[in-house]
Length: 212
Image (cartoon, rainbow, N blue to C red):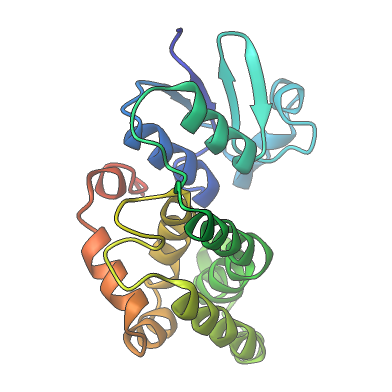
């Protein structure tokens, strides 16, 4: 098998999700930065990889695939090593449920409504909109409560080993807990705070932290 190529910036949560999966499978790969914040996602070269101009995109032995769910599951099945999908039916359903909550609700609430808004001066070139954060807090709290209820009572979200659910939540939680709002809400949880404390030193987590 050839060396795969992952397209996207290291600051992207979904690029980091795939990087964690690759690290767990001990796959050597090339990361090609595509800075979507400066418009590189709309270049002709990247649109040929991802027609919607998003990240990540992934190439392996001439096979191109985009969308994080498709890429991460391909990585899990294409390369040897421990599977990142629980064998138990209910644990697997819980994993998929957690991923669905992150994709559908928590990514936007944690990253855009809290982290990006708290850092609006740098990202959006305007002051933080406190009213917007306050308006988002009911959804943010619902996401925290839902993930707390779904998480297993241990070091990983869905059982005794790291799964794709952890790969999805780690990058999002990294940004969320970089804010006082996120840290305060996490501190009120039991399972999530224990999970976050224990997983921070895991090799695939520490090794994929954004450079900036």
